[in-house]
Structures are given as C-alpha cells and as structure tokens.
Image (cartoon, rainbow, N blue to C red; front, side, top):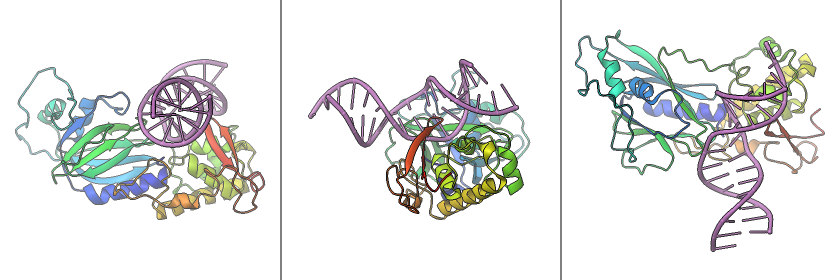
Amino acid sequence: MPELPEVETIARGLARRVTGDVVESVWLGQKKGPLKSPASEIAAILEHSRIAAVHRMGKHIVFDLEQDHVAGAPSPAKGRGRNRKTKNSEAPSTQALSEAQAKAGRSARPTNTKAQWIVHLGMTGRLQVCEPQTEVEKHTHAILRLSSGRELRFVDPRRFGRLSVARAADFDAGGIEPLEIDRDHFLALFRGRKTPIKSALLNQKLLRGVGNIYADESLFRAGIRPRRRASTLTREQLGKLLVSVKEVLQEAIALGGSSISDYVDADGEEGFFQLQHRVYGREGEPCLVCKTAVKRVVIAGRSSHYCPKCQK
DNA sequence: ACTATTTCCTGGATGC
DNA sequence: TGCATCCAGGAAATAG
C-alpha cells in the first residue's frame, strides 16, 4: 500500500517522465469512487494544460498544471449549449470529455492559469505511463492523452484511490510533512491526546504520509508499544519516535519504498524496503533484536505488529 | 473538540 | 474443483 516513501518514489518517477508534457484530452470512467471532483471539472482543468511539475504532499501525488491563454484565441470546441456532460463510452479510447473544458476555455481568463491535479492511490492505485496501443487494463478509471504521444493512466481495482483538482493550485493535504517537522512541533501534535500513539501517527490531519507499515516500523525502532496512549509518552520517548519516523521514511525512500502488495512505481520497478521490515507482517517470527515472537494486535481496525519485549 | 466505529471496494487466500 | 467467506487498509462518514 503506497505510503509516503512509495508515493515519493512514484512522484519522482512521474516527474522525470511527464514534466513539460501537455494533456491533450482526457477520458474518465464513471465508476463510483475514484472521482472526488466532478468529471467535467477534472477534464476542464486537465485538458490543454501543461504539466509544470509533479510532487508529493503526504500520500497525494500533485501535478502542477499551467494553461497558457492567448488573448482572443479561438475555442477548440464547436458544440455549444448542449447539455451532454461527461459521457463515457465503454471503450476508453473512443471518447474524450471536452464539453466543460470547452466552456472554460471560452471564458476570458488571465494568461498562464495555474491549477493542480491531485491523485491519491489509496490501496491499489497505480499511475502508468504507456503507449496508446498498450492494452487498457481492467479497472482503468482515467486516461490522459499527452502531446508526446503517450498516455498517463490511472488504474485502481479496489477504488480506494481518489482523483481531484484544485482550481487555485491551493490543494491542502492536511497535516505536517513528517520529514520537515521539528521536535517541538512534533511534541505539540500529541500533547494531551488519549488515542493510541499508533492511531495518532496514522492521523493525516496531524502528520501526513505515515501509514500502517511505517507507523509500526517507527514504533518498533523507538521502543514504544502501539497501544500506548499518546499523552502518556515522555518528551524523550516522543523525541526518539520522531527520529525513528524520519529514519524509517528516509531509508525507505532510498530503497524505493516497500512493495508488499500492489504497489509498483512509475517505471514498473518494485521497491526493496519490505526486505527491511522488522515487525510489519512478521507475526510469530522472532524479533530481530531479542528473538521474542512478534505480536499482532488490531488497533482501530488496523493490524499492528510489535515486539512485546523491546517495546514498552 | 476528540475519539471510536463503520463503510467503501476487489482479488487473493483460506476453508469445507 | 468449486463455491462461500474472510481479510487487507486510507480516509470519509457516522456515532458517541
């Protein structure tokens, strides 16, 4: 499942491959789930936009878009006023959404409009850059045709992923980046919280980007049990936890992330961090430090792994 | 203002 | 072999 290190890896791979490319047309599936913003709005913002940059915010992949407008330029669309909105045929390749985009393009806007396309991969989401003739996979929910001739596709079997847009390029990803937060700020985040520290780490409104794997791995390295109430931790323990969080995330990024289920990065390569997991997915196996069997418990519906001896 | 629980999804694993 | 059931989990929605 893509967490911060996987998303970082994917965003970097995408940046390398599509920065500077222009979205010529867009196809969006109509299945319930993936589209967080209305299809017409997503298409309007994407079509004819140049991808100026791709970066990560928390677990979100953010595409910075720019649209240049020549004053008085003719609109690319002809069919006006028809109330046909975002109709999608079964075969993704046949129909582009252009109605809303045509409208948007017609109205006078300042030159160089900035916007953002935001992708959350959920559990099983993938972004693939491929040739148009590549077979369209089952569970493909979006196809962006690029001026380079390639396509950028969003595939997500479980549909926990989300696509949205920010018109003012002001997307708010929630909490603070764990790799940027300082110690005092980190301590303040958890002060007075009675929730288990594991749950607090997963709360994207506090810290953004930490998911189940890296929460467990960080807590192991810090010697803290996942069920410990955040408010009962000392400053020293929280300080150590912050160091552990940063360490784990940085090591994982360096290895290209984990890849224990569906995650494959933008180039189709898998990460290697799963080889470094010390507790996650190791229930019953010996702790790498003390040989005690790793325990698995469920906290707030999430499986949580820890060493009963090393973690207090 | 917090915290805990439920819901959304499909494919792969498991069980009988 | 086939079919039913369970499980994975991020985050929004709901409930307390």
